Length: 453
Image (cartoon, rainbow, N blue to C red; front, side, top):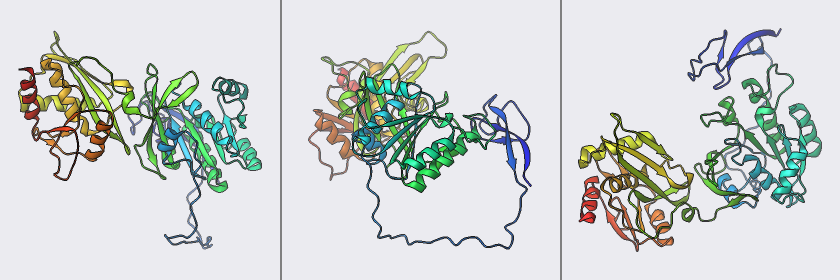
């Protein structure tokens, strides 16, 4: 017989404790443990009864794969791997006001105009509020149906009768299952609600889009198992002060990870940016010290971004190190290599590093561009205009090769760049750019000495 059990669950990571405590031992967060009611059954063996036989199928199947639903928003389709797959569950997270509901409303309006039955269920807004947003975006004529409820039982009953091709749940943290005795947004409710909705999507073959709130650290709120349950996880990145938004795929069972879509927030909603490289570069009439153009790769897309550095004398005993859009620990490593291998002194200087346009760079291939920006800022010698850089730096001061060098050079050529600096290239590589290769970081430092003379 089931017995009521008292348990305390961490709302950050989902760890379960028998009694309350101030700090979660799993995620080291404070004041996140909340009491929840649960029903536990005494552990029992399987007994002598037989279960059902599972149907086993070969790896190679002659059944055709279902066609993807192309939203018509090419940047969203790129992040999804080519479009929505019927029966898949997609989780979209991001900061408040970043554009999650806007992009989903635009996508569902586009698909509904292609004779795909789309249902938009909101647990945060009334249908009238969503209709006002649709009118502002010019989507009020789309054959899209809206609903407002937070009870998962009512939602699934409605969807069973309608059998839609696409369902949007905004957001999963507002949903609740009436058989779970905890508040909406708790770990138990988020897990149970997502499980029921994803089970319906798999059973009926409809695509499910779930909106997820994020914590102050930028992670999707609720249990980590939520990201494991869905097929695709997309994160909206960007600063609210910038008009640019990056939609990044961090998990995708039907496509590549680290694919991105670039959007610009306007008064008519999120508009696609077909050429992100030109977007993140600054047009200048004169060279500026401390600015380097990095030829990077985001997923399968080559992209040029500008890295800006500022080095100033510091009156403090411990100089400041401020980084926006890059890893602060990697900046410290690059500065240490420049000090130890090239004899450059950053100890008495404040160092500021910024990736222009609100972009975030995670590639080690940006090391050479960061080092060049730092040397340029320290020596007050600008990098020659129309120069793209890429290359990884080791602790020994070596410049190491990186993947997809040809794609990086082709993107620079397409945007009118005339020269590139990077690691040694294989003899088979061909480029029309004036290419300068560095085996050691000391060569880059010596080049700036020659440029200053």
